[in-house]
Amino acid sequence: MPLILRKIRKAKWYRSEAVPWLAKEDLQADALVDLATKGNRLSVFVVEDDQSNLERIIAGIAANCDFISDFDYALFAQEALDEVKINAEDTSGETPDRVVNSWHRDLVELSAANIFALAKVIATKAERKRVLSKRVLELVALAVASGQIERGKLGLKPDQIAKVDQVLGLNT
Amino acid sequence: MDKNFQHANSQIAIYRLAVLTRILESDPEIINSLPAEDVSAELREIGVDPQPTFNLIELAATCRVRKAQSPSDIEDKIRVLFEAAKEEIFEDGMESNLTRGLSTLVEQDGAEAIIVLIRLIEIENRNDEIAAETLRWAGRLDHPSSYEPRLSLLEGSLGDDSARVRDAASLALASMDDEHALPALRAAIAREKYAELREDMQQILAQLEGGS
Image (tube, rainbow over all chains, first blue to last red; front, side, top):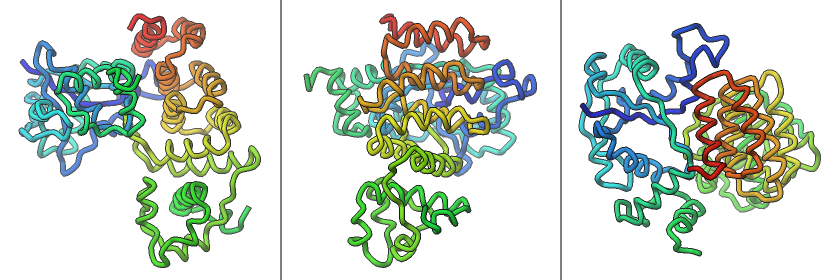
């Protein structure tokens, strides 16, 4: 069964053990910012069950940012969407990697109740993981080196592209 | 301080002043060269999206923002940036008006701005999200002369009461990738009670030790 990836910020999902004022089993309200919809849609990516395409997805998303940063994400089974009655629609992503874009989905027709349900999925059933910025930089550089991403299509700022070049040995 | 500045106590006025601070500090002569009706396009050119748009007359009437010369001036500017940042949503990998403003401040005032930041981040009623975003920015800033105070700020923030701030401090230290932070990070891991954050810190420790 494939997995669903949603970019988050892990610290917003800390529970009551780390946030003393928070009731047990409750979530910080800021966690919902990670599930902010546009047009009642939410952007996610489909990850193979063996996670073989995970790093390529991370590189693609990171390559479209202003600067290389840590990458926090939630990863959960696609069937969890069925359980909370959320539909997904094939829509192309906006990363500089065409293949990564094909793994993009929009969660559609989302109600407030759907978002709360999804938040509960992420809080209770998802793996919440982190890739540090140093590794993200390597992944982006690898994607460029392998031709998965054209250097000219990087969305990064010039000083960040210079860092990618440095990893690739292009400006040393 | 200019009376117009003092009068700016509504959120929108504070936001505008944050914008005006940036544009005037980047180019004080810009008032003379801007078109009379609308400065929105110029603001966008330097990466600021004015909300709502405003015009040159308003700009000239409101702005008497001077280059910071004392810690209290720097503090005022940081407070303005922090106030405006309450309306922002921060996303990993994406610049914000807050981080752009802080970078401009450090370019002008150097390490002194970091010293003021240290004080402001530790105040009681600060916003944890803004504090965390500030620390993440401090870790990736390319500004050698403020390196030591930034490192101190981040090491000190590993002991913050807020788990979110401790996480941001550790991430920022990962960005600096400086093994000098190892003792502070090890101490933070030893006292961290929240398992998820402790594991995240251990991931950073492995990087700084050269393991990843």
